[in-house]
Length: 117
View 1 (cartoon, helix red, strand yellow):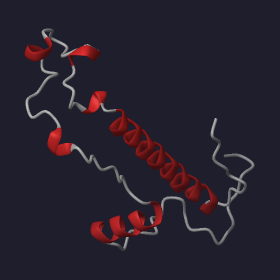
View 2 (view 1 turned 180 degrees about the horizontal axis):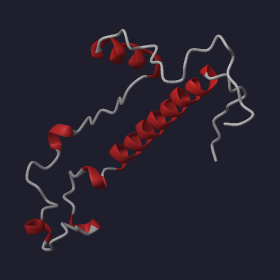
View 3 (view 1 turned 90 degrees about the vertical axis):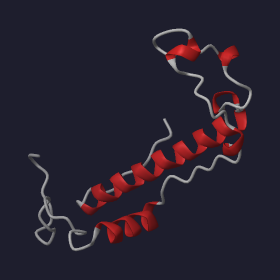
View 4 (view 1 turned 30 degrees about the vertical axis):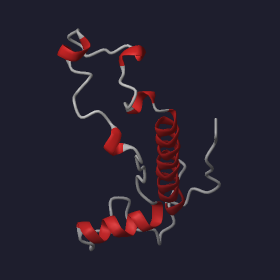
């Protein structure tokens, strides 16, 4: 953008500093820096095996199931599962933000912060 310049020592914007790495090496490096999706369902073996959100089971073409129609073992009605899932999702988003801001800082942009708003 007009008025913004990068230091002369900065590599071209289209260069990939990880281009020399194999996909496996790239994955290991980035997972080490930013982590990865780490959600675990401790009750996975107890979840219903039969589909309960199919059109036939739901009784409508959109597979819409009312709250009272979920099996007791379904993740949708398991408060512990949902809270852990939301926590893991929030952490994933935060790591994504940190990764993007890391790129901004690498471009010479300073004072980039994450807001909770």
